[in-house]
Length: 402
Ligand code: C5P
Image (cartoon, rainbow, N blue to C red):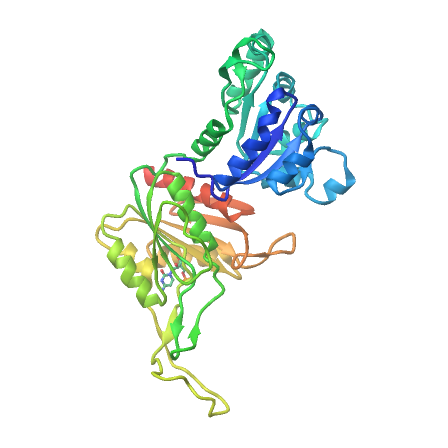
């Protein structure tokens, strides 16, 4: 499996002759679906130019820590937050030593201190430098700190010597990176997810719907696949690509969604209801287009079936997770729904404005969640929906395992 769809990889290029392979690595990471931003140390720039890596990554290349212009764009903290993975390839002996010390006096040092995403290093150096006790001790320290070690490989080196110290080939690094995202925490589990809005017809042309983009549900589907699950995504109308290895069933109304869920739910282990299902639908659907005839027009609405509640009530109900988007009293409403719908877990988010003034919840790339279950709670701060989805899925896997 070499899928890196939507993963954000911050590639750091340090001073080693293997830096000439970084352009190819960038291209291959992008081919595998990743978004790539490149950071270069001074040493890295001795071997390959920022211009080359800017061209292949399609993004500006970051080189200095104290650069007013760069910091006003995507500063080092923002860059660290952006990454799903910090990949240092090639990682020179000096870079490994600096990581051990926790130095913050250059861009890579500061970013790696600030980065909460996993870090992977692909060492590349002369075989004697790699074998040296200082390097080996540094590598052991980094591994103890949960930094992933990718390689090095054995073979002929640029300096003419033969031994261990070659950087892994770009294709091997892409495979290793995609493995890092595959947690396996839901291996063998069958997961059904609903996502997106529903449309409730008024006449052949008009419908009642909502602002759901489907992004959160799609991100959860992708994260479940990464975690090893077999995923069916029952989706309302959205403008999103189906994540790889996900079976998608398209539906329109709440009634269609209910029918599709009932068909798929048998033998499932987990049901995640991320769809913004209409709570009401027009009692009658006009057979022909409604004409503008009166000053005002009213429709009688009837309640739709609550899909997630009906699944939670099944005899062999799967582990059932609901979502709640609220404008006020988030905790109170979320706990109320957890209880009323007999859910195993509920993920609640505020809809409105985030601290930085941007819109959160619907129609947005970022979200924050407060997750509740019987006797427990976990908060996830504002972050990209893809990252948030991975953390939520790990929490679900943890609860399911109990
Ligand atoms: O009650 P409310 O609509 O806020 O609950 C939201 C949760 O219930 C979401 O998980 C949503 O997918 C689910 N839901 C459902 N069927 C409905 C209405 C809501 O599955 N008819």
